[in-house]
Length: 108
Length: 179
Image 1 (cartoon, each protein chain N blue to C red):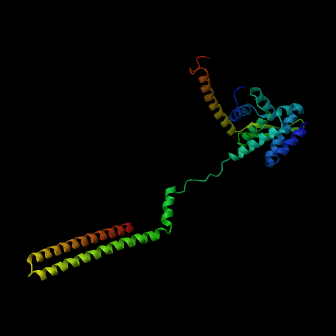
Image 2: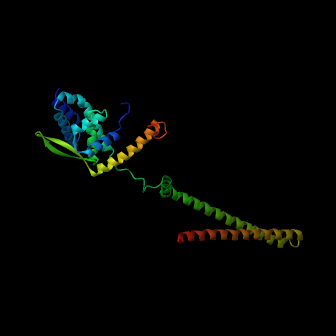
Image 3: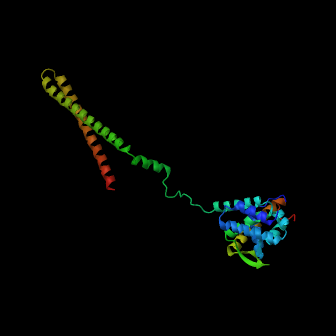
């Protein structure tokens, strides 16, 4: 993809996925990889940062004799996700407008 | 090249981080290998342990440097020019300076008073001389009386002026101290 993915957009996508349902690292990585080309090792720091900012929390669940660490969104994380969502919509509208020749949505 | 090699190298590269950071990262990557099931595939997806370590360290550094650090407050500090003013006022330079100015003013007043006395003396001398020459040359006597009165008048005017000026300055200083 020609467009670079900033860390904010990556954080927003991770929040969006966890917002939908609790998930664990590997599954989350696979989901993110389907929508954007990211290296596996970029996702762990994103998760860690979201966790440290209080937007995500973790809990362990036993699975086949070991633990799976699940990520769950917090109330602060929901607020943050809504903020991302609003900003993304505004940003997307502006990009759409300029991409469509500055004439709004008529060319769709 | 199996998961243990990856995890060992990763641990050695991020070993200097706080234990909690270190163990969280290790747990995450251990789990990733477990989930994937295929060590080679997982390794291929994850990239090198060095790369993973670099990202973990970079993120840790960023998080800890962007934490609210103690900023030196500019509030409560005086503006620069005020500091300069206070420094000059509070420095000992002012004491001799004020003394010099006061001495100069005093000397000036003293000289003026002496000059006035001299002029007054000359005026009296002229009046006395007028009496002496009264019977020798009446025009000279009249001139002498006129010159002497003129001088005395000027001295009196100047003396009153100075007295009023000094009184006004003293009054103003006293008022300022009173307020």
